[in-house]
Image 1: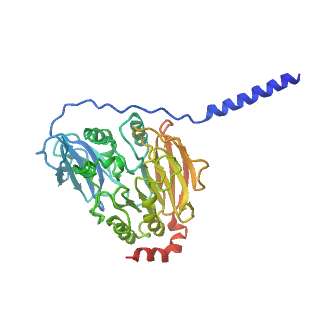
Image 2: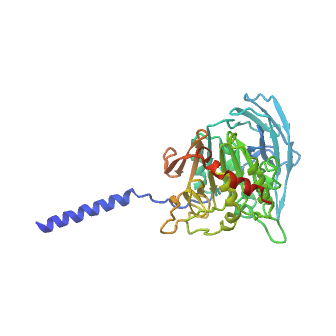
Image 3: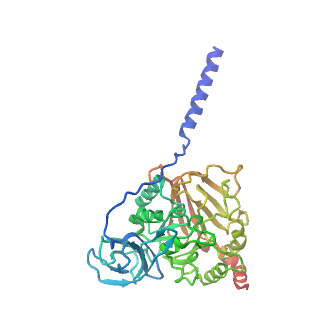
Length: 436
C-alpha cells in the first residue's frame, strides 16, 4: 500500500512538472532572408515610397525612380484621384563601389490638416497612395520596432504592426541590414512601402547603417540619402540626430554613432533643444537612440556606457519620460531609473531590438537580474505606446508568434509632468542647461 501511494505521488509530481513545462514559452527558430523576385516596371514608376514628418503640418514624401529625369513632384488631395495641390521637391543619388542608386526624391507637402486622410501620387504617374496625418492632440499611438532587417520574422513583425491602429512608426536604428550590399537597401524599401507610405516612419541610425570603408567611403552615405529626417527643421546640423513634435509629445532622436561628448555638436544641440521644450504644450518627452544604456542581456554589454555618462544627466534633468533603444536583439523593460538604480523621477528604458534581424536573438541574460529590470525576454515582436492624455500612457509589447491582441508585457505609465518631478528638478534643469 505504501509503495502504491509513493508511486501515485511520483506520477502526480511528474505530471505537474510536465504541465508546467508545457505552458512555458518556447522561443521560435530563426527564419530565412526574404527573396525579392525582379519585377519589370516603368523606369519612371515610383518605388520604395515612404513618408516622414517635416515640420509643423508638413510631410516629406520620399521615393526612388530608375529614370534620372523623372520629376520630384507630388500631387495630393483629400479625395481619391482628385489632387487639389502640388509640390515640387529635391532629388539626389549616390554611388557606392560598383553600385549606383536610382534617383532618390524628397518632396515636402503641406500644410496638411491633422488626423486626415490624403491621397497622393509621386512623379505625375504610377499608383495612388494614401496617408493619414497624425492627430494634433492626444490620444496618439506609436508602433515601435527596431533592428528590422529582411527576414521572415521581419515580415511577421510588419504584419503584426499592420493589424494595430497606430499613427506613427518609431524605429531606433538598424533598418535594412544591407551590410554594404546596396541592392538590399532597395529591397528593404520595397518591403516596408505598404506601411511606410501610409504612416510616418521616424527613424534614427544604428551600426548597420554606418557602412563606412576607411579612406574610401564615409559612413551613413546610403542612410542619409534615402532616409532624410527633419533635422534641418529642428535646427540640427546632421541627419543623425533631430527632434520633432507630434500631438502633445516631444520626441528626440539621438545618434549613438556620432560624437556625443560635452564638446560635440550633438551635445550642444540637445541642450538647446531641451531648453526649448514647453511641457505645458508637450507634457510627454520621449528619446530614441540605438545602443541601450540599461541592458541586462549579455550581448553588447557596456557599449552605451560612454554616451550615457555624457547624456543621461541631461535627459534626467529635462524629465524624459521614456527611452527606446535597439541593438540588443531581445526585449527588456526597466523601472524608472537613473544612475544605475531605480528612481521615481528617471526614465523608463525599453530595449526593443527584436524586429526580425538576420543575426538571430540574443538569448542570454545576466543572473540575477538587476533591481531596475522588470521584464525581459528574447523573442521577436513589436511595441505599442498609446499616450492617452497628459498624465497617462499605456505600453504593450507583442510577441510575433502570438496573435496581435495578445500583450506579452504591458504597463500603465504616469507622466513625469503630472508627478511633481519636474518641479523638483527645476533648479537642476536650469543649471545644467545654462552651463557653457
